[in-house]
Amino acid sequence: EPEVTQTPSHQVTQMGQEVILRCVPISNHLYFYWYRQILGQKVEFLVSFYNNEISEKSEIFDDQFSVERPDGSNFTLKIRSTKLEDSAMYFCADTLSGTGGMTDTQYFGPGTRLTVL
Amino acid sequence: QKEVEQDPGPLSVPEGAIVSLNCTYSNSAFQYFMWYRQYSRKGPELLMYTYSSGNKEDGRFTAQVDKSSKYISLFIRDSQPSDSATYLCAPTQGGSEKLVFGKGTKLTVNP
Image 1 (spheres, each protein chain N blue to C red):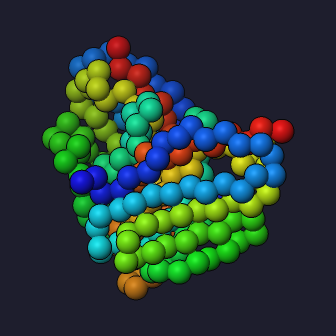
Image 2 (image 1 turned 90 degrees about the vertical axis):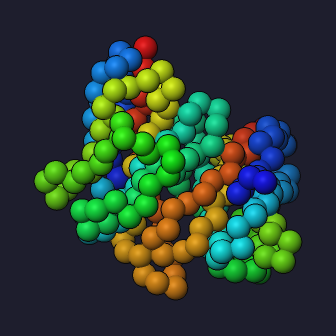
């Protein structure tokens, strides 16, 4: 069964450093998302991405964050200057298509645990 | 008022028990009501979803939505130790819209 994959599984970085979290979505899926989950807290939406553009972003997704799909397969989340409070699990998700009037299952990857020291 | 509220538990039950998990929400635009299951240090996986008000059954699982009271429930019959996980309710407006998660209820089913 196709699945969303994410690398690395765990990333440790120093405060102020840049990190890039990578996701390989399911091959024919068109909508991509990043969510994060701070330890002990709920899963929070960061950003959605379709047709090489951001569709929606939350207030968490400020100027230090960016997303791109550099080669048509990978989907990346870049955090430019990490802060201690960026420590969290980051989940990539995707759906096949956003068919109006119906909902699409969002398939989640296993997550990348980011630890900022 | 938070968009989605969910009793975090934890909830501990004996094997074979009926489990009831609940959420409330505030956004009337939500049309689809998802339940995700998350095992420790794993990504959420979709368990089932319902559209609008009503019930939906899938094996031992029943999802129930009451839009008039903005109340979402998941029932698990004949609970098994393998059901031990965190259960997340996640309503959405549908299509490709973002999911809005509750905090999750951690369930432990004891053999």
